[in-house]
Image (cartoon, rainbow, N blue to C red; front, side):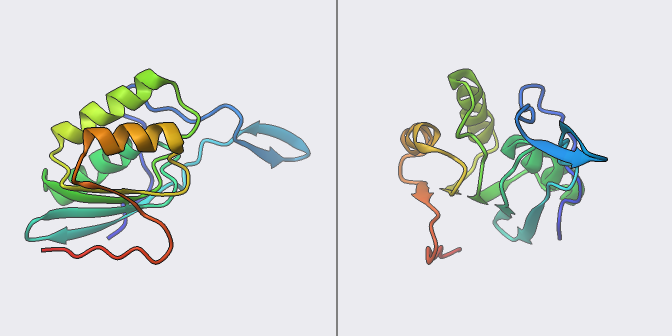
Amino acid sequence: MTTGEIPLVSGYEEIEGNILVKQKGAFSPDRLADDLSLVINTDFGLVVVSGCAHRGIVNNLIQARKLTGVDMVYAVIGGTHLHRVAGDRIDRTIESLQEMGIQKLGVSHCTGFEASARLAMAFEGRFFLNNAGTQLDLP
């Protein structure tokens, strides 16, 4: 299934102010209401594939859990949009992902170097860079 639109509920994830949309010749903030993730409900937990997670990877996971009624998130694969955020938001994201019990975390394009390094340390043995051609074996 897909998550559909992602509500901003985490309390600390927000959309960057430099993401704009042009409407009637003027630029205004893009609220990115079309952000969504793919959710696969398996016997061992949810596998969530995000695009860029502009509304926050934790918000994406909260929505996936809410829609499926499944708390266990086994794997998160895709963008986390952490490349231009402050360190405290990375800390809070790591804390939230750890609380959710993530077993496989494969980040890609918009995660950024600092966030990727910090996530790799926090999820040692469970972290991988999700680049083109990456394969993940699921239980």
